Length: 55
Image (cartoon, rainbow, N blue to C red; front, side, top):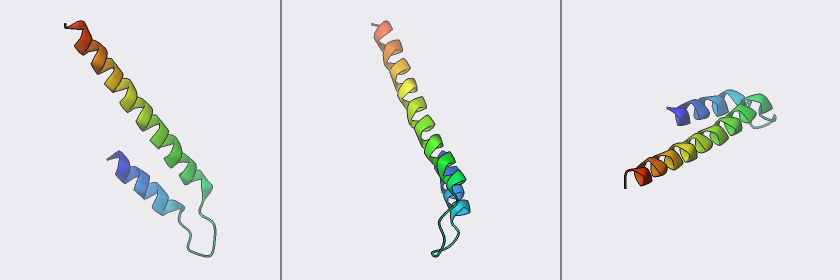
């Protein structure tokens, strides 16, 4: 679902081949990717710690 939102924002930013894309949606996409990767890393780390505590 997140990838779909990112693709939609990139499509909204596209203005054609002769003009530059809108920078605001592109910045939102980059920020969203960073947040998604950070949240995934946090979830994986918490899962590892919980697994280690059970031993």
